[in-house]
Length: 335
Image (cartoon, one colour):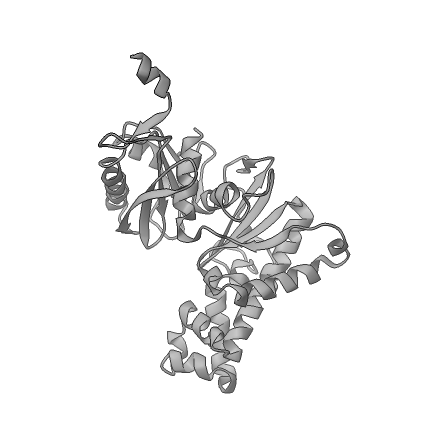
């Protein structure tokens, strides 16, 4: 190896001559899209590639992931690839044990992707990679050792950082906050239990409660029903948010409803973990203070006397839909 090559060490070269330090690819695989990006060590996404997710077709799904990686590697030389997948990932960060919205069951994803690329590959849960991104570059960047994040979307995920490290648990599947029990014998959950927070504090719960309000108290749901064309079955999360921003009382109550339950869970997390920061992310957080304010109110109330002591601040995530890409890429960089 030439001396100049040795001096470059971990540098990765942009095709065409420009040199950048430690570029990696992050891939965020969800139920509807595969989003990938080339990320630098400061968490900047230099370029992106996207494909739709063929959720029920395992071979085609692998092809799509390889496609976005190949597209990005055609323009940049990278050191590793990190993949964030919506599902339970094994302790070796290799196999997708189960993916609720994809057809993967005990899928050896790392090895399948590694057959097509000549750089190291790592697989991690999608909420974990988002949490890691927020800890390194986002809402928790000022925390030096601990942060807990909940991702509020159709369901609820989460990630825990303790001692500056991502807490994965003995089997690699820690942080499944969506399946914490909040109502004994409550609504049935897809995990097989009843009364999980996912049934009360998620985007799905927001829509269900808004539809119920529009059915039972139509007089306070005028804007909600107008936006839905008068049909409660056409009410979506986007419509609930738009109606709440316009002052619709039923829509606002829907946010207060899920905010209450999320506040209860955050208070329990505070009691158990005592993190420096609590972060809320995911698609439902696009509603901003409509959700954040009732969450904070319920959180402080649920802490009771504990609130007299120092407690973690509840903050919104900052990285938006790039968190999964940034976090997966940064974890891959640390292999």
